[in-house]
Image (cartoon, rainbow, N blue to C red):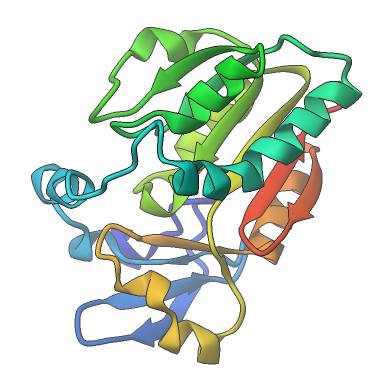
Length: 219
């Protein structure tokens, strides 16, 4: 099997063709059920950043904040259940306008931010946190298994990882899905994929709507 065919989330060789459009191929992992784009179709770092530079996500944009509240609210609820009114968090993949970090800061939490292009601060990945958020990030990851393991490892006991990404439903819907038209989207997760992830790391999982997952550790 070619390296291009290995699942980037779980490392399985048990993958198969899932879909093909005019631009690229999509493979499906029979182990963790991730759908992914082979690396031969990935953009270069320069091409990827050029796409991100076109985004206009401002910290003071009320509409953007409403969008982010879908992950903000359940994470705050989790922190409240842990008795944390002033937790420490990391917004991973914050982009050029870290609105979510601002929302948590305004709510009394101490925040760090990281983004490979806009806030490259490797030192924040060497600390631990009560919560980590990754909104509209993990679909862009070339090595999601490595990155998610790293983020999970940053969580303190009782901590949670709040993820926002659209979820795969079935092959028919996938073929019509607007989400796969973005050339920077290269990994696509179903609810079953997140259940695999939760089981692998012995985390609890909560689905919040159709695009937010909260993974929490109890130890």
